[in-house]
Image (cartoon, rainbow, N blue to C red; front, side):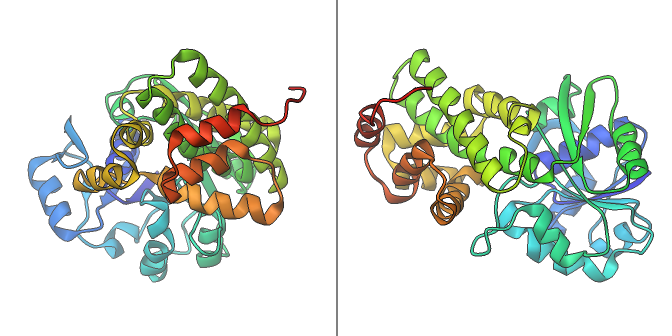
Length: 332
């Protein structure tokens, strides 16, 4: 299968290495020409995936058009805020023979509050769409550590099964789903709660506090997904609980690290530190977008609202924790 991947951050690069390991013909298309030249010359993405060599038969494209000319599957691995611009830039290059466009993005589009699938549907209305989500640390995937993920799609069954088979191997197990809404929302929401978990860890509130937070966060995620038309059971799977546990507890998590830094130095200092390291903290953008979504739809999400207050409004974490803990008592 010919696969083109747009975006050479850590996750796009890891997916390219993984799919090459699966025997697929992979072309990686970095956003910047100079980045493409660097990766092609050194066979390493030192900026985003240091220490992991690129196999020689992964093609690194300087411009999108040649890479997309014969692609069977087109994968978008850019930050969610850049998805529409990236899709529009390559729209004219995508051949009619392309079987599916797949998003690895985790977030909503600012302003429209659309999911990645909906953004891609706007740009590519005639093509099937899919999303891959789950507990997927890029370095671990690139090194071939075992992981299970979910692939949600509206494609015909034979296309979904072809992708599942082509993208799976002994270390990367894919489960299929038809719930694009639940899979995409779970993958985006967990970043917000991972920041909240990081704040708890930075404040040294203990394991009980973090476990309580994540359990109630999962309940909130279910309410939000259900209100948006997704299946609440999806939240209990790999794109919800699986990704939440990994992102909220692992030392490699940018969102958790951002939360820890907020607790120690405040939101503005945390933002500056992340930007200096060229890290995209998806949960920061997701907090504002999902706050607007839950307010619009009348969904009860007190943890998300408190996280928004701290992350986006700079409210002291101590005050929102007190507000959460003294809410009216009720049944679980």
